[in-house]
Image (cartoon, rainbow, N blue to C red; front, side, top):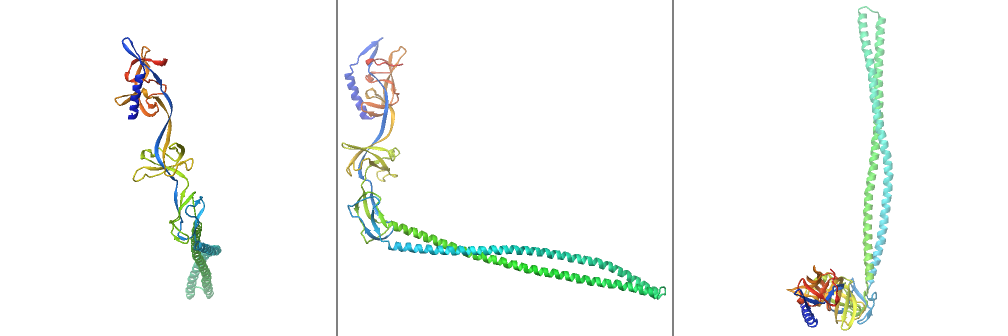
Length: 480
């Protein structure tokens, strides 16, 4: 228990003891103490934290250009009031405008080259399509020619087969006729047959020999003609292959030209993209050449002058915000308890107002290890800049049980209250119950450990002990 609260308890106990005018009775030789009781009540309890803070301007902002260049004009002076969106300085834009014009011309040139490359690719695609159509037709013709050659070769083999069969038969007849003539000639020499028989045998032999010679000659002629025909077809086939190869070469060359045109197209597109980036950058630079205030406030300093050259990020105009904030430093243990938007009570002497947490630093101060919190008052300029302000921030509201301060007794460092109950004889007795003190609100104390509606003793607590029989003052009834 807090030392101050304990001392306050001691004083109240003493006063109560002097003023109580308590009476004691005896029942069956047991002392009966008359006590005053109180029914524990529950009500909303507001948990809050308190800090000391100081007021300051919400923001001191140093405005600078995002690019280097020569300052054309500073449009404000020290002490001038400014509004958010007001132009406060400008840069010379001659170089920027020239870069914008060059970028536009580069885009136009690149787009022209893109169109030329696309047209070239389109023409090449059309030419390739035409050649492919002709190539398919020529390949079909070549396939037919190959089929024709194969058919003529088959015909050649059939011619050879037919003639060889005929020649074999004629050769057999010739051999027989020759044998007959030779036999007849022998018979004629021996006088067995006459000259007419011999002449007839010779005539038959000559006739068959002539037929054999004519057949062989016809065979050679027909084979020669067929071979010549095949040779001519094969020459035509070779010419057709050359024609197809030439068309394939044309397609290959056209594809090479198409690749070159595509490379030109890609290069033109890269040039167009680079020129577009340059245009956008310089257009942004043109917009950034007008420096605008982003806050309402007044000018506290103009470090640069018109005509001077400034680098990107160098302060040109320093403006102090007209808004007021209260700054507090919170310890690490309170960091997670607070959040942006929470309401705070702000008090300075007899002046009181409210505000809301507008920001909480993410990292603590390296020296103090505390986090800076800004609170924006509901009414601007509520307090003088730099003045101290007492800040109270409500963390939450909870329903808690309250008892009189006089009802609490400290026994060996532990806080107790005496609760009234009934024994088996239906007599009022007291039972001690351990509690935990959460906070004090005047003469009432917020505690944990008993429920709302519990009847507790609020005086004579030092003279009581567990199971002691008591009388209740003022007719307070106690339920079982």
